[in-house]
Structures are given as C-alpha cells and as structure tokens.
Length: 347
Image (cartoon, rainbow, N blue to C red; front, side, top):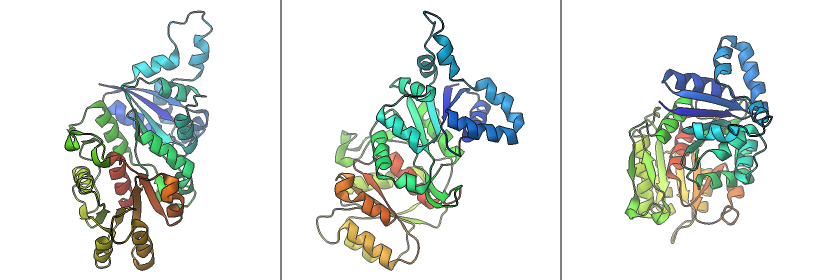
C-alpha cells in the first residue's frame, strides 16, 4: 500500500482528482487531496451534480487553512506543507494548468498546493499531467517550461494528447486518460514490473536518456504507422525500441536521411513523422516538413527535434506549421507519450 498525494489546479479537468481518488482507494492505497482555490470551483460544480461523492472527497481533502492554524501555536508539532510532502510516496498534479506549471518551474510557491510539491523530497516523483488549450500548449515560454521539467528527475511530465477541447477547439493539450495516469503513478512507485536499460553504459550517451519501460494500460489502433527520421543510428534504434516496448502494435519505420524518408513517404501514408532538423547530406528536416505539408493529403502529425536551442531551431515558426518541437537529449518516455497521444484521437 502506498501514500498518494493528489493535487488539482484550476482547469476544467479538476474533477479528474475525484476519479483518481476513487481509483487509488479501490486499489487499496492511502490518498490525500489538495486543490487550488480555482480548482475547488470546478470540483464544487462537479459535486453539485454528483453529491454522493462529496463525503468521500471531504474525508481525504486537506484544506489550506491547516497551514495557518499551525502557527497559532508557538512551537507547532509539525509544519503542514512539510509533513504532507514527507507523508506522500508520490504526488500527482492533475490537471496541471499553464499557470501552475509556470509557477512550478519559476520557483514560485504562493499556495498551499505549490508549497507541498516544492517540499516533496527529491527522492520522490511528481507526476505532471498537463491539460490546456492548444494555443496555450504551443506558447513558446510554456514549451520551455516543459523542457525544464523534462530535464529533472523529480518531475515526470505526461504529454497530453491531440483531441477536442471544451472550448470547441481541436489540437494537442487534451489530458491523457485515467489509465495512463495510474500506470505512470504505479511505475514511479515501483508497483509495476519495470525493465531498465542503459545505452552504451552511459544514460545520456548519443543524446538519449535512460528509460524504464512498462507495458501501457491502453492500446493503440493497429492500422497506423510512425516514421522516425534520425541520422544517429543508436538514437533512432533506442527510440524505436522504447516505442515497441510501450506500444507493441506500432508499425515503425526508421530512416537515416530526410531524402530517403521523403521518397518513402510519397508512396506510403504515415500517422506521425518525427524528424531531426539537421542532416549531414541531402534534404534538411525543415525541407522534409515543408514538402509533407505541401504534398501529403492525408493528415500527418509532425514532431521536429534538434540539439539547437528552440529559438535558433525556429520552434515558433514550426509551431505555425502545426509542428511540435522537442529538444535533445530526448526524454524517451515523454516522446513515446507524445507520439501515442497524436495517434489516439479520442478523449
């Protein structure tokens, strides 16, 4: 049995906290709930529609005023936000809004929820589950925040999927399913069978990070193809192996040059293309992307990667072409989730 802390910030998917709480309690774990002021507005509306869930929620909810009450005593027995961090074996922030992630990355701790996450010991994981409008996801400053979180060991970001929004928009930013969140949580706790591999004895060799694999709790359609265009053979094989372990039904095709990939893509449809921007010979990744946008009639999702800085690589220009950008070294777990999210359209 594990101690799981669920944190909800002020997005429309805040009631996800209730669903996760029910799931983890059903699995026999101890759960505590914290929520921002804005999250409570959405959760309150949800409880008005489903009042039978309210007693369960209140039993596990940890109100922010505990922090204030503690200091009415000259020498309190515990500091609440520190105690909550020590109690938890893992924390899950779902939904994680653009605002809350910005504060998390910037070191701002102006709420009880953020204080707890900041005080969570470095040996424990925070599962970050973004949920927002596509334009907010593509915002260049927000993308840099995601890069910074992905570069840490403490935070594990679950890339959102492409899908419909409450606003009526369609695009990447839709929160991943409950099963994906629970799988990532149990992986962090070591409650799922995990296989860990290191490439070339160096966890960061050839721009590839160490990866722990676990079979996903949700599967993908059989009829889709993912094309990986990467001049680094070791990096390409590592990403293909990661995807096969996570999603064994994927049809994966790998190419060392953009020129060969484009020739092949003219004859074969693909759902997702991930390409490096810089190649030693032949077409560049940008030329491949522009050609695909001009000539391919079937919708294809494109992810670009580079060792160059976002600004130098032209990530904002790529975003206007509806192209996602991921800097190297690649966080393989995040990339695998992004590719799966682009394929699985339904919320």
